[in-house]
Length: 185
Image 1 (cartoon, helix red, strand yellow):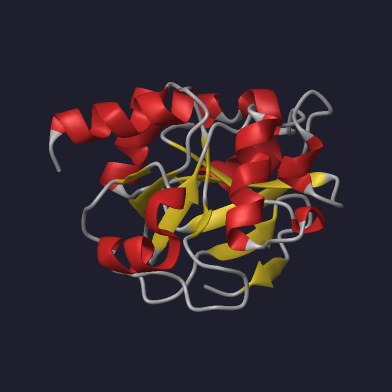
Image 2 (cartoon, rainbow, N blue to C red):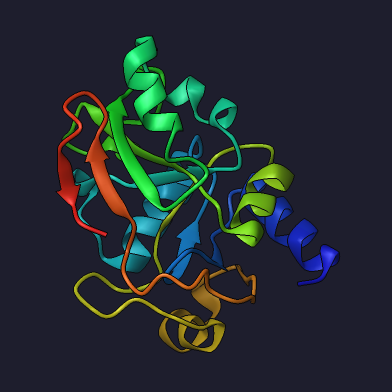
């Protein structure tokens, strides 16, 4: 992946665009998590009900902190032991972030990604980014840049092409407070 492509994708995210990019298992759709118009556009593209909430990915935990309530040391250690990596955690959400991110829940789904391209996109965007599978709700997620283009065409502002991370299933989701597995990986 060329540096100009990464720079362009990050610039588009900062400007309110929707970008598709490879993740651990499938292509994701992302946007600026603080831009409510971008989030609404992304939800409309996917035909995803807003009450379901979204996942944020980051290159490091510091990019997620402003979206979350502080965790006690024990819970924080449980979470950070799995990062960077393919575990998404449900963590109590800050009230200062857009409600569209958490949907009907009081927790936000977050992950520090181990996928090198997705992590670099977060670094260049200078923020965590929304990460939801690149598909229309109830359809199979895109596993290639071409599949993203076939599904969404010009409705996606940029497709950052690159290899998937090698996982065959979506990331595991766990509740940070209880440790309960909500979705098996």
